[in-house]
Amino acid sequence: MPKPTLLFFGNERLSSGFDAKHAPVLRSLVTGGYPVAAVVSNYEPARSRKGRSLEIKDIAEAYDIPVLLPDSPRDIIEHLQSYRADAGVLVAYGRIIPQSIIDLFPAGIINIHPSALPKYRGSTPIESAILNGDAQLTVSLMALAKEMDAGPVYAQRDLPLSNSASKHEITQQALELGAAMLIEHLPAILDGTLTPLPQDESQATYCSLIKKDDSLLDWSKPAIQLAREVRAYAGWPGSKTTVAGIDITVVEAVANGTSLPSGSVRTDDQRLLIGTASGSLEITQLRPAGRGTMRAADFLRGLKNK
Image: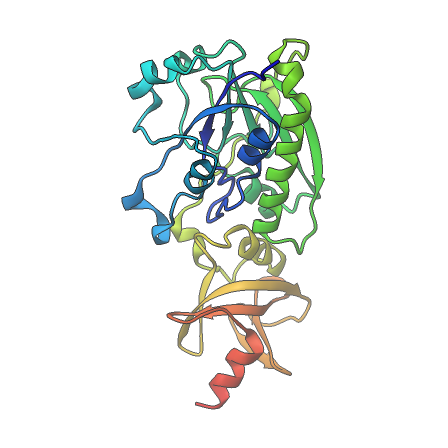
């Protein structure tokens, strides 16, 4: 018996600056035998940071799946209706889906969201978990509603977080976990035997939007918070400062117990430390303006040779 037909919404970019090169959710659906009639994505090439191509478009085309890039899904509602899909699957679409689109699907639209809903509703749950020093990230499988991330939840699963894992690693793990959860629960969702549970609205919290201005490291903050910012803002907007008159982006850093005046720089055995409100930030990898990523020791060696 053929499996139900699906429409896929989104680009699998679950965090800022993340490239969904492997698109594990879309791949898992196709390799799991589900016919994916089309991929509907939200993409504006002229505004794409660093001119990034749409990774999921490459994956979809490899499987001969048409890709639709409407300004709004409302603009192509009749086209979407013509697919007669049983359900939609959404991973990082980036815009609110109107109820008229959700109603096209007998089983609704199933959304993968990387937080313990109703906690961290919004577009930056992974960054929020890193910034708050959470010990774990939770991936939720939910029924999409017209209100942002407010739909009932089918399943949740925890993903332990270390204070050294990069945002890229965490995002990839969350995608892979979400793909596994989707394949596990999709049959019961589609046949109606798995009933989602409503969220507790009184416990809802919302993510803050990340702004370009967040990239400037503020040395009046404690080192542990700045180290979290370096991880959370990796890729975009980055974490920027100036050392020896050179603008740099901090790529990797850890909190260090060495006490230094806020903003003061110390080099010690080829180590680069900058004072904060509590302890110092030890920068281990950085990217000088106009150059590639390098170890801090190599950067310091270059300064000495000038």
